[in-house]
Image 1: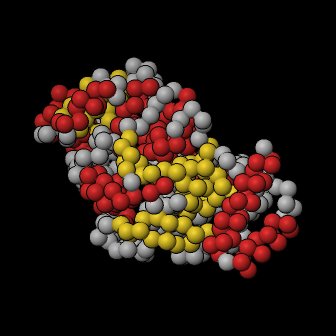
Image 2: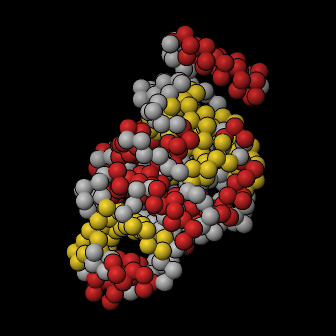
Image 3: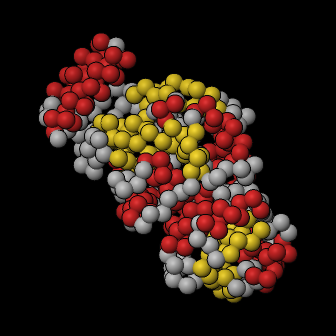
Length: 396
Ligand SMILES: [Zn+2]
Ligand SMILES: [Zn+2]
């Protein structure tokens, strides 16, 4: 195994060394020797060249870009990305819907691939491991929240999200996401992907999976509970499958009648096509819990009213400017506890990946090439995705 890894890492060295020039190669070999030469994979002490698709402005269109990532540090791993899937958040952020952006910026926070190099302090991964990266790539790792595995809520405000986030170590000054051939990430922020799930099916779990799994688990749903899911896209279809796997009676609310047949196959009790808010009325006060994944403004209180008084309603969809307008009088009349949730921590992300792998829960995906990303984005916005686009990174 060691021999295999050693020769593998040597190959990587030669490959990247050639790209960086002979002088750099010499330095790299020196560095490898200094670090002992016996480690299963010596780190790469220089920036890593990546090919990907980036936004160059807020048009919502991406184009090919060759860029550099930071060198692999002592606590980092380099992942050869095999697949990256498309989240509605990618589109919102690149268009500037959540604030002004720095460009070029590579989106993508549902990333799956193979570890190609590890830093000298890394014990969590070795070269050749299957690994996934989701919405964050670093945090302080010392505060109460980080130590509790809630790195997304770092008390020191040191959570680093996967793309577009200030990162002095990144040659471009910001983090660059997964629509690319590789990514360098602190080892803690990658999760293991079990052999029993394909990498392309694991990718969507890294954001859509954890974002729905975390609030479902927090709500303590149990067998027989009536669980509503509003918005059956990338997140919603996984919420349906996860809640059904936990034994819940799932009620799926969609505005797309053409999705009904698919949704029935996801294990629901009922699909309700909400072409008019009156369609919600027969469900008033009937559900134990509802999760809404709708990423645009909608009538939150009308949906929340389907939950029993003092039951909970969680909003995970993030609309423009992150703002939602809701009728406080309608919400108070329903007596429903309204809350919101943001992804999930690293231990829980590992948990959802393991859970889906072990229980045969798979996202419904469509594989595309890099050249199809712009069309796929339009389809996501127009509710035509079925249900997660996965980009084959070999086409970058
Ligand atoms: Zn996402
Ligand atoms: Zn922290």
